[in-house]
Image (tube, rainbow, N blue to C red; front, top):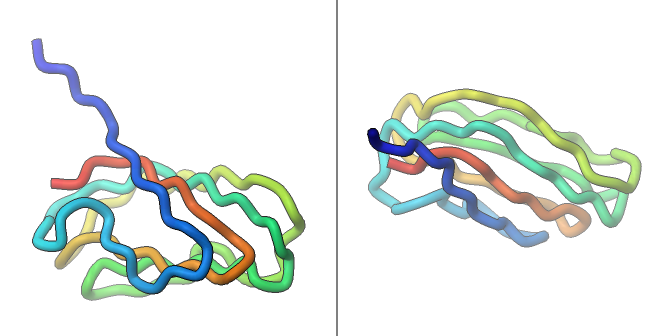
Length: 96
């Protein structure tokens, strides 16, 4: 029996379009994001996949850690995450 473990990748604060997994990955699945807000005014997290871009977390979030369940697949290319200066992210999923 094959085990189907999730992978994870860290995204530091102030990063633009960090690719999750390999740059040519398609069909990846993003299970959840663990966002650590250290500066409320700059807590923005943006997710894109080559065809769509969405704001996962807007600015002005209270300090703390947020677990965001997504369970989504890419539509076109690899997932990319952009973070503001006041938030870092741990992405959990499968990067194909």
